[in-house]
Image (cartoon, rainbow, N blue to C red; front, side, top):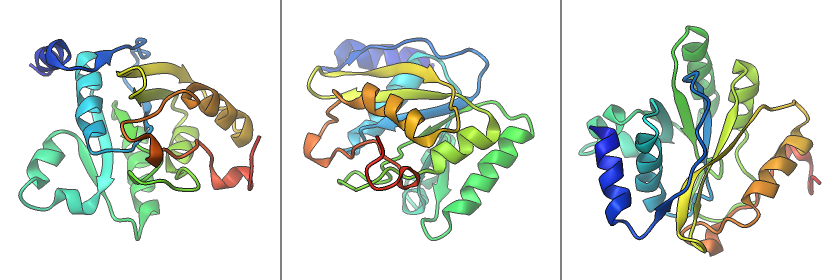
Length: 192
């Protein structure tokens, strides 16, 4: 059903779906970037449903209140209280270690507005659980959205983030002025 809805969406949307296939082992971290609009959510659902991926996603806890709370959870949402983000990281890692298979969709910018750094939770989860990271994107300049390469993290934060920066360098997001450069605090002030 979800795949049929995704196909219908891409057939009528002004956006084009462009994607590589993700590894079929059924688990990984899926980045959604640039995250500059609420519409990114609709595009990410269409992308993941098109590929028939079982997903979970992190969202701010206020999205899980009435009237949309049940729907957000049914779609795979995990509420994040920004006052205690470490708890969510621990819960996700526990699920993965218990053998649960899903792709965790994370928008590391953490907000739709411009910021100085990406949040590093996605990196910690992927490294600690030994999961690959698939680079999902929205690019207004080409009106495309999809999934790019799947990368194994090396533990060299600056080198790994250089690969992220290279991929996202030409991706504008729906509202390009809100785009945040892929950079983690752990890299230091300028990274590479």
